[in-house]
Length: 243
Image (cartoon, rainbow, N blue to C red; front, top):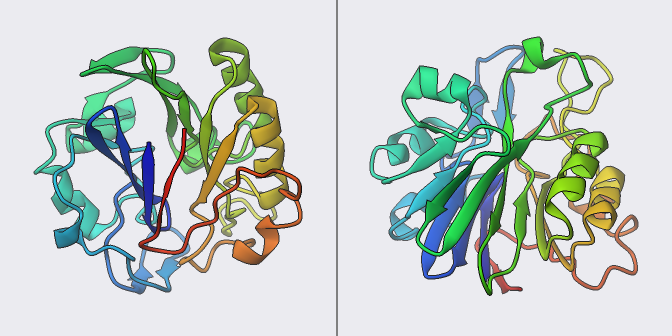
């Protein structure tokens, strides 16, 4: 399996002869007037016209531009399969993958798994979000967290799926005035605990830089993951082969 980091929550996954893309964000830096406002500070490490053909997009949610920006929305029209939430399907016409439902893409089974984008009980404020598990015969089991902030959700996934080989964890400790003082995604320490719960042999942090609403980043990942030999903190455009 090859993982190429683009920027923010966006990575290209090459697995079983397939190419999948997580949460497409390819805009240049700028400000988005959504909610209290979100500001992007860096462009992608791989340009949109350089990513090549994509077989499927794993879209954790569509309602926030740091997970699906203007360029990313245009990309969806050229991708044969976009999996996401019921809310996203209602708004932009993608394919729904409910929690614990499965769909088959060649030799790869894709499972929708829960995600909570903030403290329990705030779903009406942050909206519906999903995560994904990928697996298949002779293939590594891969977890893509999406914008999940709940370790209880991670425990539920571990209880039903078992150990994962590779975990892509959205780990910037995002905070906005929408829910003051609360993490809307995993912080670095919780990401390390999530990796432990999942028994993940390899961890690739995503969504920890390039936006001003992250409270943690590259510099806060080292200490919580000390002793975990399979952590790959990539730079934009860089790739790693795992699994």
